Amino acid sequence: MATGKLKKKQTIRNNEYYDTQAVFDDLYSKAKQNHSFTNLLEIIESEQNILLAYRNIKKNKGSKTSGTNKSNIIDVGEKEPWRLVSYVRARLNNFTPHSVRRVEIEKYNGALRPLGIPTIEDRLIQQCIKQVLEPICEAQFYKHSYGFRPNRSTHHAIARTMFLTNRHNFQYVVDIDIKGFFDNVNHAKLLKQMWALGIRDKNLLCILSKMLKAEIKGIGIPTKGVPQGGILSPLLSNIVLNELDWWIANQWDNKKTVKDYAYQSNKLKALKRSKLKEVYIVRYADDFKLFCKNRDAANKLFTATKQWLSERLGLEISPEKSKIVNLKRHYSEFLGIRLKLWKRGNQYAVKSYMTEKSVKKCKENLKGKVKSMQKETTIASVMNFNAAVLGVHNYYSVATNVNLDFCKIAYSVNKSLKCRTKRISSKKGKKSKTYQKYYGDYDKPPTFVHEIALFPIVHISNKKAMGMNQDICNYTQAGRKLIHDNLSNINSEIVYYLMRNPVFGESAEFNDNRISLYVAQNGKCFITGEALEISNMEVHHKTPQQHKGKDSYKNLVFVSGYAHKLIHATEQATIEKYIRILTRQAIDFKRLNQLRVSVGNLEI
Image (cartoon, rainbow, N blue to C red; front, side, top):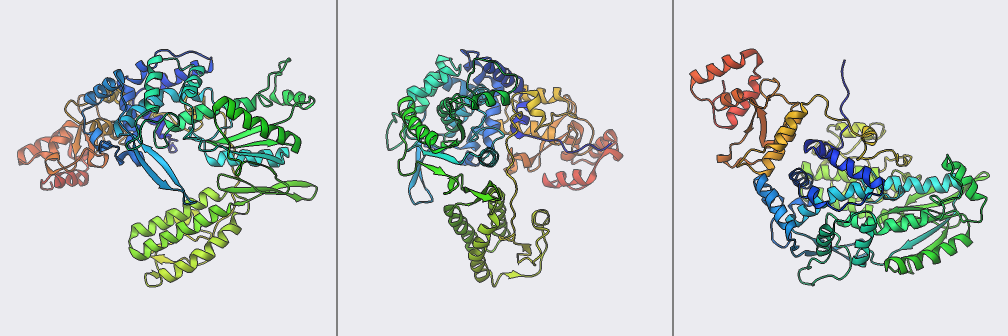
């Protein structure tokens, strides 16, 4: 019987490769029980955790971005695994952070946003720490914070806001903008918050304190703030505001009552009979909304929250951006969407659009892609345009009236598109599988550039924003089953053997990629399809190292020992010997000859 494709969450798969999932599950379980962790560095500097950290960051977009020492992930990957592990352990043993490179990127409004780029070595160390801290924090984070957390997205946050306004008639929203949040985090307070979460390894807290005070090149040593650009920064920012989440939740949703209730719904009914004010929070990073049912409650909450942020976290709000909104009269903006309650018969329902800023930004972005196509008419430039269209469609499709917004965007961009692609466009070409999947029902003929169909900007319809399934969790077996299938047809003993026994003298990249290769090839030889065994499996470089072949995944393949000899054999007698051993029927000669030619040998 045919089996469906395995569900895969790459971070969880990586945990399987390096046999760390059980360790992280244990941390999560203990944190749920308010356990205190005093020896986390032992886990952080374990060989499995360090090599897992390398694997997790090497595919990151910014892994090739260098810090102040000019090195990037390629330089790190060239180290042998044991040298890489020894290096990280030595740094952690007497940690002094490298200086941070300051980069300023222009925001949409023209202002500059500072980014702090640590060296790749410090980013690797941060990743080692993040992997261990995340399960502890996830066990204690509030369920309705959605930013920079596993399996959560902006769409989940938007879905929650629509649920509260549509289903529960929360017409008043308290919008609070924290002034320069990332630049004003109090270091001492943050460390105390980590201690309260059970992170009580004093050596680790000392390392984190030093990281927060890493010198910013050309500026100096910061006394407050979490630098945007570091791997740990999103997690640390969530730790800071997690206290706000629970402060709001404990006023209603998580309010302790004298009587214990078997069901949350019964508890909420009892609370509604009290004089307490109903309030909910939805937060995405430092962008959050507080939902109330009347103006009086909203006024009190606005004042109380402003005071709490100042006294408890040392953070100030931006007066010009913070306000109370009556959704029956005005729009409230959240994550690029503006929403309002409109009367429909005897009830109110949410109508939502893109914000004006989002519409303008979208127009400028797509017009920029059109200019790129005109300037450099390549397949890549066409694909970039299509990717941009699909990206904004996917993101903004949760707005109920998104089709009206994209009519305006299409009207503006299509004029530029028609003018700038006049000489390079045609009506002939092929619709890709992606086009057929997302735009197959579009009833107008597409425009082709390089015989590739351009995705129609105007063709979009609303998709209901789906709420977060709170049962999904990377750190419980039941939670993982909802999003991920364990490797079932792979010999896990060999996977663990590959992880625990790196090839001496080869790079960390080589040794990490051979684990991926084994799984991707279903544990079988690339040439014969036979099951690989520990005593009879070798990694072959398609382009030899002496010809500048790299240790990249695309340049490697797993074969049996005899198949490897057959690839490199040049004497006819030797070739015939290994064909007899492997049997002619088992050999895929097309694959074999491709590999032989790539190393400079003749086809068989």
